[in-house]
Amino acid sequence: MSAAWTARVLTLFPEMFPGPLGASLAGKALENGVWALETVDIREFARDKHRSVDDTPFGGGPGMVMRPDVLDAALEASAGAPGTPGRGRVLYLTPRGRLLDQALVRELAAGSGVTLLCGRYEGVDERLIAAHALEEVSLGDFVLSGGEPAALVLLDACVRLLPGVMGNAGTAGEESFEGGLLEYPHYTRPALWTDGQRVERAVPEVLLSGHHEKVAAWRLAEAEAITRARRPDLWAPYAEAHRAEWDALEAKKRRRQRKNRTADGKSASTGEGQVS
Ligand SMILES: C[S@@+](CC[C@H](N)C(=O)[O-])C[C@H]1O[C@@H](n2cnc3c(N)ncnc32)[C@H](O)[C@@H]1O
Image 1 (cartoon, rainbow, N blue to C red):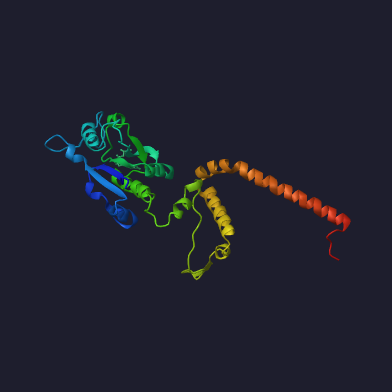
Image 2 (cartoon, rainbow, N blue to C red; image 1 turned 45 degrees about the vertical axis):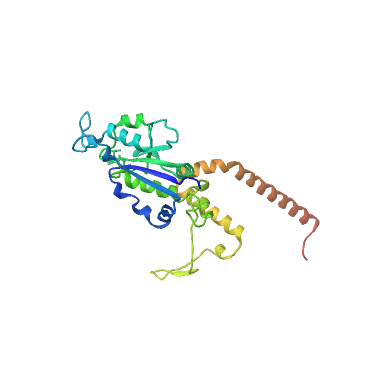
């Protein structure tokens, strides 16, 4: 059996893990050895009698900064020194990083695992980031009090993509961001539902038709409309990638219309096809 996908988390709060990842699909997969979790308590690498992991910022200013020597020792003891074979990807979770997206999640899930450094206070000493060539990754344009919630989110997104974790393997390929679109809307029973304001809400007819091609076409059209309206940043590259295909379809439609008009004209002049 191949080694489990391994998440290594460096944190001042190891008790936060696995947290929510111990439940549901991720929890079952952890129990079954599909993935493994190692927490590294950064404080264990502190050298002084107070076990301090942070200090005041040079140049003044508010808050504290995590010390490079302590973090370096924690990283070397767990992931290994930079350049160590098999070290894998080492990420520092920070609002300054590149935004986490499904493409990065897919990349990480396809590897052997990931090492995550969770910051606290004002963050980590810049020299540590350079010395360990850390990949800086952000969860979004907001500030959390620590990297741990970000690590939990990133791991949740990765673990659900590991082989055997999701019951229905087909669902991953249809979700938001796969294929560059947000997902189409979902409906379930009852087919006709009356809401709290006594408004009757029916499921779109096409979904009850049993016609798979029409359902697929409707879903694609909905996904495109939602993406276009809500996420111009996703829509632009999607439209660009499909431009040639759409232009070809449009040209084909125009040719067919022209052909029909010519055929109509001919049959009108000859009386052909006319019903008396
Ligand atoms: C209070 S924050 C520090 C924020 C930092 N002073 C700044 O302004 O960018 C403490 C830690 O939380 C984590 N964190 C905060 N917001 C985050 C985000 N949007 N994405 C990923 N990690 C975040 C980072 O590990 C960070 O070092």
